[in-house]
Image (cartoon, rainbow, N blue to C red; front, side, top):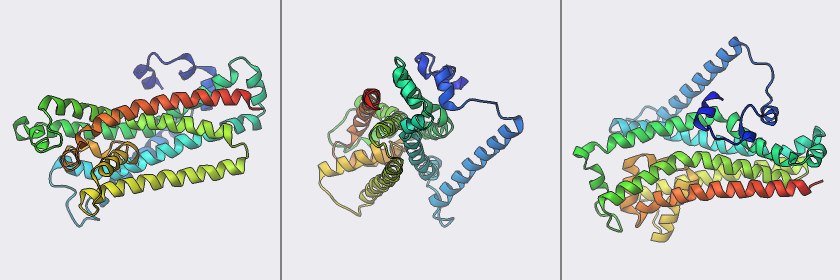
Length: 324
């Protein structure tokens, strides 16, 4: 909590952890004992270690090959699938934490009082949305830490070939691009790859709140949640697999469709994770016409996703005020 306050010192009052409504959302009560905290910390360390082991096994084809030809590639290959799985988990968790918000308040017989209080429904829904980031801060922190490590790998790669690596990457790209433009587009691509998990979680939380205002029956709500989870996993698998097959030369499609596939795989499939490996990004730049502009498209997608999350939250509040 202290870290979040330092990172976001200008958070609105309703989004702060010391807000009474936020404390209600987070279920603050008696602090766990030191022993419980140690057990939790040990469990988290073991969880991360297990993910790294799974990633290493997949990267080495179950110990039958090297994870990569050099350290940065090896790190990317080991971290890719664990981080991808955590991102899907983050998306699903953000959705599930908000889909039953209004039904929960109704079961506790709080909803009518909230609606009768000026700004009551607004406050409870906004704090519920913000509480998702507090509840999932550990998971989000692991995802961002992994991405920062991959970003450091990009910076290290840029020093290769006496600092001329990016010159080699843009050789033959369509359209022809200057060094300055390539560096700027790469910077946008790196920024988008860090922001995407955050904006995606915000949108998923808003969409979950929207579902809570539309689907009143608990049974239907649960069925819709299961359907959305299957869709989220399915879309991720299809986009990531499709992009991998294209880069491996296993499928051939037209240029516009190729660009949309690679953009979709980056924006929605792995949320920019694959673009944090310069070797793969360079391959996309040279293989896909106008592929070097995917980074620019990703940063626009980030802002659009954040805007839609805010608009959807506003719509949810208006609908909730009218709901009996």
